[in-house]
Length: 336
Image (cartoon, rainbow, N blue to C red):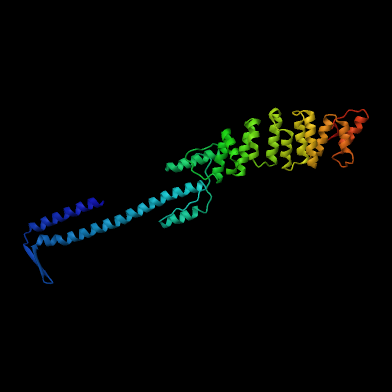
């Protein structure tokens, strides 16, 4: 029974009892207590205790009803905070959310010690904001850039992935990242530069590459881009500057020599690798490879003087065969 029904019922009961007792015509009764006396009809004296007890029950019901109401409000508030905590955990954000009920505090303490992951399949809950957050994270994990419903720190793993997604979908944004490389982490700049290399012209790349702290991978990719666009590519001194700042292996230089062979003028290519080999010992074999490919026998012989080792044996054998009038290539001598 609700409070409203209870009040109406007790009032009706009091009225009925009052009417019944009053119909008995019991007269009046005088109550004397501590020098105080009051004369009232017996019917009134009869219902007064009932009225008093009814009022007490009203107060009791209202009081505990209010307590239960505020308890439920606390539970509802904690449930909202729990959803917010889950969202922050999914977004890898710092969280300082207070809980008022003991059970929710215990649950929150457990959740803060766990790593939550968004499911790959469809997620659905009764909380629309949580649904939007999960959907946004799923899109980020699937390589889609999310502009809305994802308020996250760009330094976090999720924020970085979303930034990478934007880079991969917007090459002009990637170029802007490289232009402002000092504002971003090196891994983000690297992704942006690789994206720029894959889609932008060599003219654009030449304007921005110095903003990047080039490692071996990026340098090789940059040189490969230069090979594909040699008409608008680097001058020899620029290439020398690039390879000087990183440590390439003998095989790296050989592969570059093979790729550059068909894109640069032979004289320019020979001059380039001669200068590189003078500064980088690892480039010597690549330089000898270039000389052999362009039939520069005398220069090759000159550079092989006083050189010993397995790396130079194929070149020496090649010269001896050519001197004997036999035509062999470096590959036919099992040189890789």
